[in-house]
Each structure stands twice: as C-alpha cells, then as structure tokens.
Image (cartoon, rainbow, N blue to C red; front, side):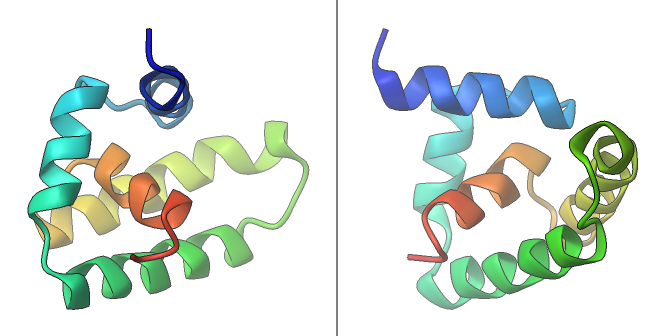
Length: 88
C-alpha cells in the first residue's frame, strides 16, 4: 500500500472519518486553492484550541473538526488533508 494512503487511513481512524483515503484525496484535489487555504486556517485554529495531551484533546478535536467539515460540506478527513498539505 502507498505510504501516503496508509498515513491518510490512519488519520481517518483517529478523527473518526468513514471515508476511504483515496476518496478523501480525490475530494481534497477537487477543492479550489482558496478553499484549501481556508480549510487549512480553520484546522489550525482547532489544533491550537486543543493544544493539550493527545488523549485529552482528541475527543474534542474530533467534534470541532466534524463541525467544521459539516459547515464546509466536506469530510473531516479532507480537512485534515488540508492540514497535512498546509493548504496547498
């Protein structure tokens, strides 16, 4: 399996996404550059707000990212891809 797909699948498990990694990659690729940059900014805010040990922050981070995903009509995994790619 491709290393990038493995990383994206693991990230999906952590944030509770049900989307397959290749589908999330395709959804991310279909976003416009300004939308990618916007989502990157949003996920950075969530991560800053949840700057605690992982076991404490993860449940709230999942909720925050899911809300952001719903507001932007994308999957939570797509938002995390924006973070991995730094909005590019």
